[in-house]
Length: 131
Image (cartoon, rainbow, N blue to C red; front, side, top):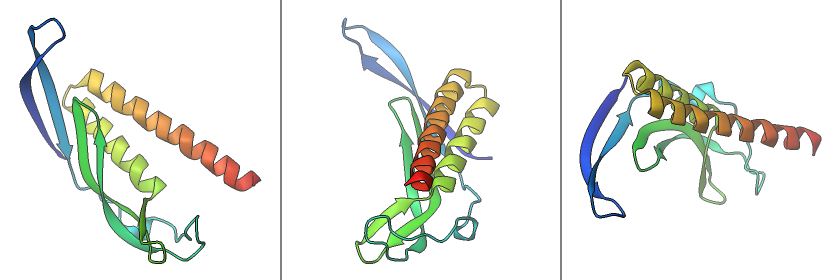
């Protein structure tokens, strides 16, 4: 399902007391391939892009996600772009790994990130179709 490492660290708070901070690193293979994403042209130069795998490092102070997701490379601009499918799949799997291991609060936060990403993608698609 995925590797999950939990580290308990001490961190000084504002009032000079030590509070334990749990840090969680999630690593997994996504199982999504470049064949699973559509062909795409660069939004900036409109050149056809090649499909590649990109390192997806996501998270905050307490939970970090590290995996590879399919994405795109524009040879003309030498720029890389994550695929929407890859980002949504990686956040979904990270949420599920956290929930399966009993980290309900962290799973909820990852789900909030996933919902934000899905809203962004929906509005982006709406703009592309209307524009």
